[in-house]
Length: 280
Ligand SMILES: Nc1ncnc2c1ncn2[C@@H]1O[C@H](COP(=O)(O)OP(=O)(O)OP(=O)(O)O)[C@@H](O)[C@H]1O
Ligand SMILES: Cc1ncc(CO)c(N)n1
Image (cartoon, rainbow, N blue to C red; front, top):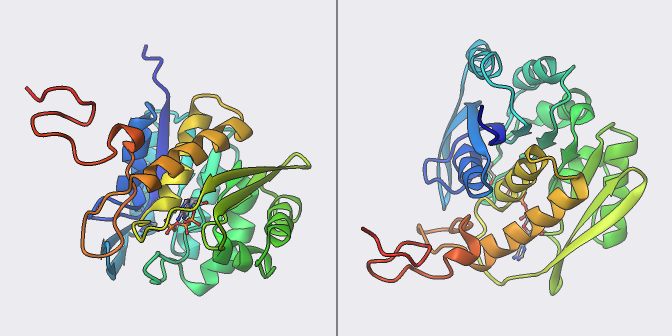
């Protein structure tokens, strides 16, 4: 029996591989958990923006979920783009009595500004999915929609994180500071009555496609390995820092994060792989 832990992502797709399901699977692989995925929406997007979206039928999403869950029990679950109320209700029904750590990245708008969740769902996610979450990882605009609190400062981030736990019923919330300004980014975790801040330098780069997906997938992977919420967030923050510092100039728009991080700080030398080992 394998001792490798597994994680399941339930999310939308990005054919350029930088966000959504594809990003999550790369992060799971890099964090050494076995990655599994259920697709909710197929998105025609690239580093420049979203061109079109097709939502899969809810009964078909259910068939995918059943196929995985009746075979393999994941050690952690992450949801990303869950665009409609019907999809949320399905996932809530499936996860209601589960004790599997569950990370919600409440994806609403892509970096390009394109909407990935309809208006009703932005409200309904509060009642359906958030109460089931082990960790919710909103960026500033998402936290504002979830809580109704305008966020401009660290104190506002704290209020919002506490609201998501105390009022909406999540076990923990991390209000990310990527959208604020300053020399550092500060992500604020609230859980069990305590705040913890996670910092990194703010890199001046436009290559931030998929940062939210990468961060939350890394946290889910660490929870799958049995780490505490605080430890998982700390590892996730280091992981996303490296993935942004060495983000990849791939595509014509905002390039993707680099899940290899420190191991690929530039292009590999000719004849070598990302580990610096010869390609045979
Ligand atoms: N320029 C930057 N330099 C360093 N860290 C950053 C930068 N931008 C974002 N981060 C960090 O990346 C993580 C993801 O945050 P962000 O707010 O960008 O997520 P997001 O907006 O949900 O991303 P996405 O566009 O994928 O939805 C957080 O830990 C945040 O602090
Ligand atoms: C499918 C998907 N999920 C999340 C994001 C947010 O980056 C995106 N661009 N696409």
